[in-house]
Every structure is written in C-alpha cells, then in structure tokens.
Image: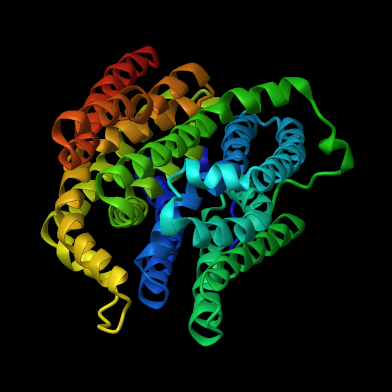
Length: 457
C-alpha cells in the first residue's frame, strides 16, 4: 500500500479528496454493518428471534463503554488533524499518547462496574422475561472484550486523522470478517448458542486490536510515540474531553433511547415487539453506511484545512459532503420503502419445527416490522445536513455547538416525542417519533451551519 502523507488533506481537490476519504470509510462501515446484520441473521436463524432481542438489550451497555474509546478517539483526532495542519507534530504525538492512557483507564473501570451491576443493568435495559438469561450470557462475555473494542475505535479515528483511510478501512473489516467466521464455527458447528455468539464477537475485537497495534508500530504511521507521550497533559486532556464529550453524549443518549424503547415496546407487545426494534436498529446501522462514510471522510478534511486556515476549502468540503451524503441517503430511502418485507424476512427462520413461542414471535415480527421500518426511515433523504453539520463543529474544535447539535435529534426531540406520542397513538406513536425528530433536528442544524459558514467569509 502506497505511503500517504497527511499534507494531501490540504492540497488535493475537495471532491476527489472526499471520495478518497469517504469510500474506504463507507466500505469499512458497510462491512461492520453487514457484520451486525448477518450476525443477527445467523442468531435469528440458528438460535431464535428471542436471542436477537437479547443481543439488542446488551448493545447499549457494551456500546456505551466502547463509545468511551470512540469519544476519546474523535476528540483527540480533531486535535491531531488541526495540529498536523498547523505543522505542530509534537502536539499530535502528545495527544495520541494521552488518548491511549485515557482509554485504558476509563474503559477498564467501566467494565468492572458493568460486571458488578450486571443483574441490575440487564432488566433496566429491557432484558425481562425470557430475554434475561440469554442477555446475561452474551453481556458477560462481551464485556471482557470491550476494552479492546474501545482501543480499536480510538485508534481507527487516529489512523483517519493521519490521512490513511485505507488502513482505517482494513481495521474495520477485520473484526467483522472474523466475527462472521467465528459465528459459523461457534454457533453452527459447535452449537454453543449465545455463548458462541458472544465469543465470536469478542474474538473479532481482539483481531482488530492486533491489526491496529501493528499499524502504529509499522512505518505506515507518522505518529511514533515514546513513553514520555503517555504522561497526562491537562490542557490536552481537557480539549480531548470537551470534544470527545460530544461523541460520548451522543452514545449516552443512544443508550437511554434503547432503554426507553425496549421498555416501552416490551409493555406494548412483549418480547416480540423488542425483536421488531432489534431488526429496525440493525437496519439503522446498516442502511445508512454510505452517509456515515461521507461523514467520517469529511472530518479529517475539515479539521486539517481549518487548522491550516484554508477556509475556502473548509466551506467547499461542507457543501460537497452534504451533496454526496444527500444523494446516497435518497437511494437508501428508496430501497427501504420498496423492500421492507423482504428485509424483515431475512432475520427470521423459515423452519417449521421451531418452538411454539418462536413461531408466534416470528409471525408478530413479520407483521409489524415492515410498517415500522417505513416510518423510521421516512425522513432519511434530509438527514445529511444534520449529520454533516454536527460533524463540522466537532472537526474544527467547537465543542459547545457540536454538543448541542449532536443532542438535538435524540435528546431534545426524539426522547420527549417517544415518551408522549405512544400515550395517545400506541405503537404508531413510537415509530412516527423518528421522522418528526429528524425533520426538527435538520432545521435547527441548518440554521446553525448557515450562520457558521457566513463567519468563514
């Protein structure tokens, strides 16, 4: 693989550069999303739909701890991109060392707490009834691998900040492929059930960590840190924290959303309704992969050029990213509106010898999920502006507007809506909360972003 310099972020044409950054990011996110999707299909077909619901209960806890690594990664990577743009390599090195130290301290502490409170956390996130036992099995095993996942997510953002999107893509592909191979061996061949699903995912995390560790030791990375860079530097930690808190707050709100949704839907329709949301959640991760890819590709370009005071290139990157992301979001929207029944069927076993409760749950899911999917993705064509707008403020180090815009959709709009509307509209109230929140958040982001762009003139 050819050696790439971060300087190209400030010299290549924006359109070409965004494609170069976004395509590997999209491929990486696609493979990760396919991993989650196919993993759920395997679990649904080989274990059952209740197992899908059990995994959905565990995700917010494990994802929140892993998101600590992503928060530290994105917060620090914004500093690294701007430092490299300003030719301050020592600050970039110190930031990276502090990211590693902080990730280890925080995630190991959170894992210890997560294991101690396991019996309280799982029911709180909707793991009730027949969901509890498989959820506890999956949760306990997964948590041991989460620190490695956090380090992977942190390291991946740093690789991208260096302008090395192909290496970042490979780092995202490795755990996904590893997980699917282990799924087949542990679940299908060895018949380990939920234990197999959990160990397959954990092995994937370890493989990813091994690759990222190799990358930073190799000549491909510009960031060659020494022991002195691991020492805590309070100004850098404060900046990492303020910017990383944006990502952490987003994941915290996502975890709260899962908690609310799992409990609200359990009360409306039991375990099968939680399984419906589990399928919708998988599609939210999978279907929007190209939009998230454009957003990830946009971050280092905006941060580097802002640090280099090339504001015309910053503005051009905003407009180009929104245009590309809106185009792919519209294509995703069309596919989801046309094929929701076929998509839902992929997650359900066609075997007729399943236990009666599984057959009943499958029938319920097949009846309810397609309509829910259409409502949830109804505003997809306009979300590009909201995602790129929030990402811009994070990329350029403006923590407060980045935090506010990140929390706008789920925190300020979706959570109040999903608490209120189901009281009057039942199940429909849950699903229509999604597009209403998308529209309102996009309007607010558009106002903020327009004002910021004018200030770059």
